[in-house]
Length: 138
Ligand code: T46
Image (tube, rainbow, N blue to C red; front, side, top):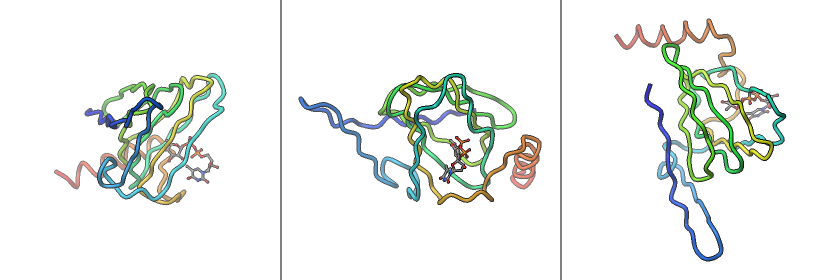
């Protein structure tokens, strides 16, 4: 599995750092939605789903957390701990977020508006979705 991590260019000067993100330039899609999670309690694990079409970039802009990516064949854990790093998560990837530090703020840039119908929340359904896509591609 190829993990795609973007390293953004901070505009640093004597005042500190600033990271600017533009769609189609720094982010490979139109940004239709932004959300973030914070005050995540110790030991909490979130996610447990894939998407039918949503693409996202996850940025831990404060603190740290870990992301489990699972493409149905392989799993990888990606630590996020730098505010200038973004993890690309494609639609067909099962994801779980965990090990949040108490001060973690996980910012997400999303390619689509919120739509519950885009979620695949059942792992067997996810495997069938992946299999269907693979068969079409073959
Ligand atoms: C994802 C991972 C990384 C909304 O009303 N609008 C939104 O845009 C979102 C993202 C959520 N919600 C509501 C739906 C639920 O009642 O907020 C509540 C928590 O959402 P959820 O349980 O889906 O959160 P996570 O952390 O499991 O997953 C989220 C995203 O939903 C998901 O797309 O990839 O973060």
